[in-house]
Image (cartoon, rainbow, N blue to C red; front, side, top):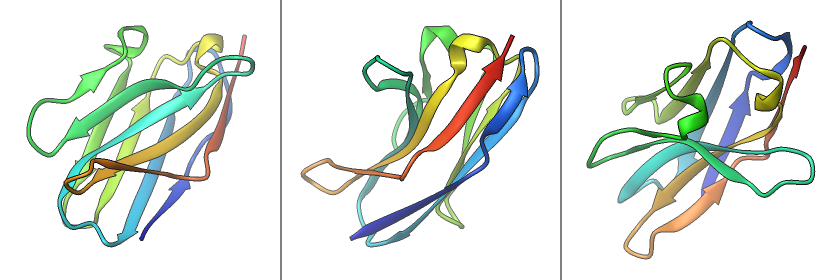
Length: 117
């Protein structure tokens, strides 16, 4: 089993910054990727950014140039630095890891990000 504990998030004005962090523990053998998704009210969950073990980081077009994902392999953590936040960035942000030959997804409990205009 894998446990994901998220921290960060909160309320910020447009143009501000927030940093999300996620600590992973448990059976992380054959880690494939770590990343962040978000879900706005009434919308489907969408990819924000992910960092594969093999390959380059990927970002949603809407956050390119504003968000930066970083992974610390020694601590099994993944962070998301969010700058120049916009009201449309509002939502619940979920940490995600993909593990093993079956590419199993694990999710954090979610953390609320609210950007006021």
